[in-house]
Length: 232
Image (cartoon, rainbow, N blue to C red; front, side, top):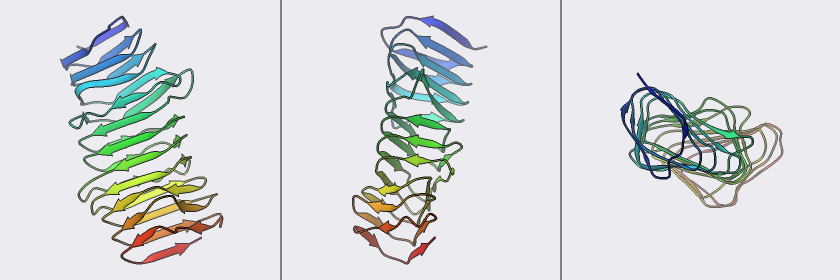
């Protein structure tokens, strides 16, 4: 039937076992683990949110924390069956780390710090990602990585790791590629900014660089095994 605790004062871990739709609000930092067979709304009023062990949510999950705090969900066995959203209460969150051993669909997100996203399946976006610092994105096998929302804005370097799947990135401003290793293809589009690299970018498949605003492309650490295609 579900669990709703909106005045929780828990100093230790919150362990969920086959709970239905669940809404938790803790007065301090929130450390959560376990299994939710419905949706999860997790709120930390006075600190960040972490996973103290594996966290499995069959429905949509929303994590809300106060301005400048971090949400770190980095257990390798985490499974999120629905969408995953991160919300800053009163302002932007600091850093966000999310690991999902299945497909991961990122909702609209604005943070002042770093984004680390790892997916055991495909990695996609369903809203604009506005990241104030660096971004690290990882997929494996033949899974694809597609972050193609037109409003995406990656302020810091974007580092990529993939298997044989295609990788697609769109940035509304300039995009700096950090150290990256890709076993498939890479497609990068900037609508109003340059494309640069600040680390070695190794790509087995074709590399397509689309500089829509003709701001310039400078890749001096590219390691491309196939074709490099430049468009504008």
